[in-house]
Length: 263
Image (cartoon, rainbow, N blue to C red):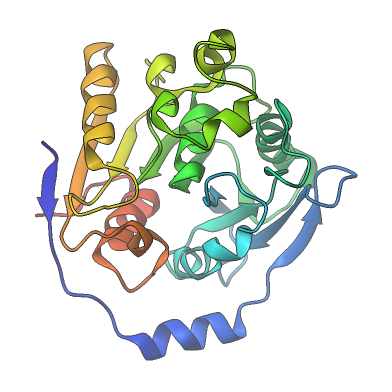
């Protein structure tokens, strides 16, 4: 079982104000129309620690990086720069292995920006919601990236790819048909990741059952990974991309400080 957590939720007015005035830098990390990212920067000269946001939506084209804008803006208030990436998805060039190639290329592009307000010396923290959580955990398992992943946060993450029906389109077949592909990208088959892991997953999630995060946490700990699983209440599936929610506050506190909030 994960650690329970509950706390007060901040008001709506501040969130709406921050979103209204947020103006990210627009970048491209490749020639394709989906190979782009938004850079959200805190106020000041920096340099600031960097977090990479990977949106969810079952890897489907109709979901975009706009899902992560509210939480990206919230992190800038905490002094963290956010690289909110887009990538090829099912229906827009997301055939195997393009989605994974894009996530890797987007993260590896950060040093090429040579941005004076970004601090990449200690690596980046990667976080993602739902299918984006699967991609974040996969990115953390990479060992040859241009910038190291120093920590990863999976929010209601798809930790077991073999249990996700949409994964057949993403990977190009069933686990029985292409087992070698699942072995390359299924988070639970990639442990140990070798970096600190925070899983935030509500017990009342009706879309991705929390049992999958519990199984992943158990498997990762058994290999020596540093894993914390927190189960917020309330903790519905979409609460993780709402900056007013308890679920997001848990993730944001960890990303910003690398210290878990008090229960």
